[in-house]
Length: 132
Image 1 (cartoon, rainbow, N blue to C red):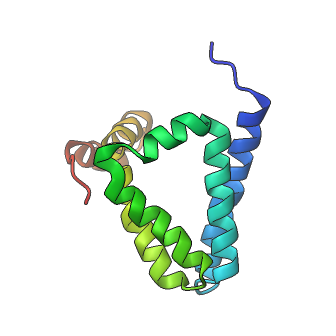
Image 2: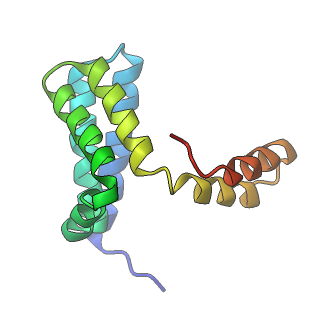
């Protein structure tokens, strides 16, 4: 059984609030303050969930440096109040960082959903290994 610490529970909430503020900032025509706050909450929550060492080892692997630089560069651009450009850079960095994780997610969703159309769609998306 996996034990979840109190810090990890706080991290899940912080990450959830970060995603909420990012989506709310996008809905309000790329409001730079909401996007910056959401980015900071998201990254803080990620640090609390998996820890400082694992976070740095994930982001700064040699083959993920391009995605990391685009993602963190996008965060910096959003903090400098250029929200549209920053979000484009963040999105590219996010897709580049997590491109190996998407087939796993689509495979899980394809097996977990009982809706025939969606399960066939997720199984087809699972077969594609390159998203970017």
